[in-house]
Length: 98
Image 1 (spheres, rainbow, N blue to C red):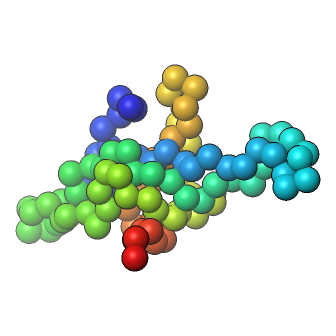
Image 2: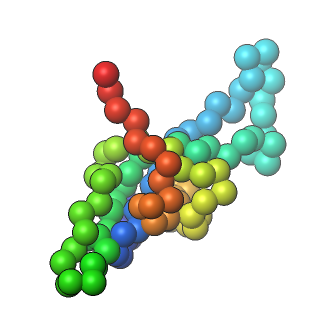
């Protein structure tokens, strides 16, 4: 678990792992792999303060799987694990089960 607490409307994501071996059995090096644009929400901030002084509730919560822009957010590494920090309004969609 990351030891980061997002502030305001920021969200901490752990990008989903990408396939490292092609269907033909060829190993794809990290430098050639496409960046993931899907991740698990690890932590969320308390929400942005509105002009009237109340907190705006975030639409995502810990455990949600979301889709975000491939080159969005700030990448950060803790203990060899990659994370992405981005504002909630940069998240494109939330996966929902049927």
